[in-house]
Length: 211
Image (tube, rainbow, N blue to C red; front, side, top):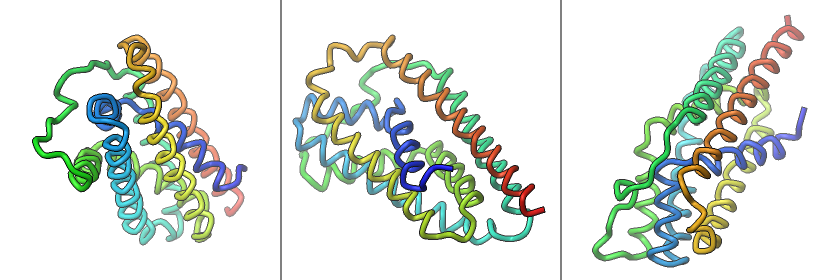
């Protein structure tokens, strides 16, 4: 069993390269609006992820700790991650103007709000974070310190990697073709499936040990 911080970092590295509206917008903003604008957008995405994670945790933690609920919700959480991985693996990628919203009067607050709302309004992210929360909460139980350390690992890793995307976006622009993005989706999809399977296995082992 890995340390909670390491587990958070590993999952953070996996979800940090998911391709979707936020990913494309972050790259495009860094290229067309400058590094500072990209960093502000990344901060908005980070704040959105933190809000989603805490909202899901506060809602899930009230029912996770009761009896066999830990097993049930652990299985659900792992299954959600597996499904999310399969969908990601099979997702077709494309780049068009839909992912880049033009801003007439850009400013620091505008970019932060754009990143926050772009992420927060994605219903699939709600499902994904709930899957992460119920799975991890089922594994760590009432050990809230480990849970918060795990959350810190995820959020710190995603924020750091988003900043790195901004810094290198100018260098890799010519390489960001559909074939590369499809390969990224395949790698991420497989990783999420494996992570979900590991969560399910650990929940079953923990439940068997308590039975």
